[in-house]
Figure 1 (cartoon, helix red, strand yellow):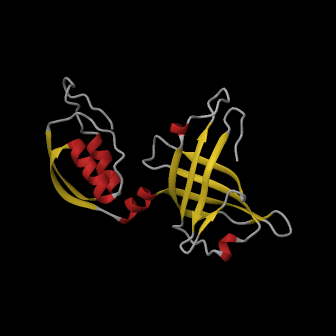
Figure 2 (figure 1 turned 30 degrees about the vertical axis):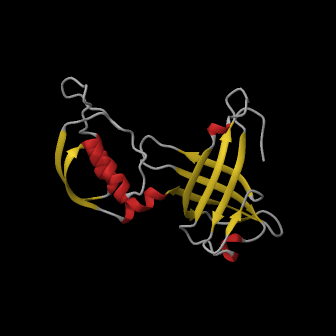
Figure 3 (figure 1 turned 180 degrees about the vertical axis):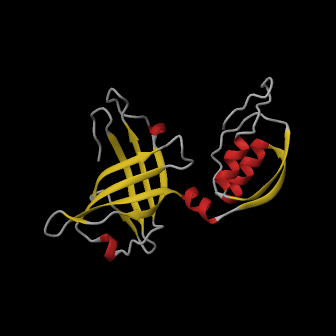
Length: 193
């Protein structure tokens, strides 16, 4: 499925893992919205489906199903992206809107999704003392508590001592990022990572 107009989308994969099966849901989807918010640590997405197979009942969609999408878009002038431009995301379903009957045997609904790290952030707490450069502490928290290592590296060599008092991993990372001083910075200017 590919569009050639500006803002078009070339879709390689659109799958929903319901535990016992991986379903290709490309024929069912009508829209996909992906959100990155500067006020949130996690990406979210919504997927609108026109469903004639009654997936919520027949496949028992109850939440925490893994959604996998791989796509690339066109540039603003309509030229297709290169093979290096593929975006490959795995998200978790955390909600579903009410189902709207749109035909004799079809219904439409929206699946709400977020990143795996958002779920882990709600399940885990950091209660630990650290004595290391802040970027190393942040990387350790990301890998140990959120199963991800996608934080920007910052050249900061000064050691930072702290005790994280049973905070969510994201709260701890945000708190540490506010205190990170770049190695080449003069004075006490802060750099956010």
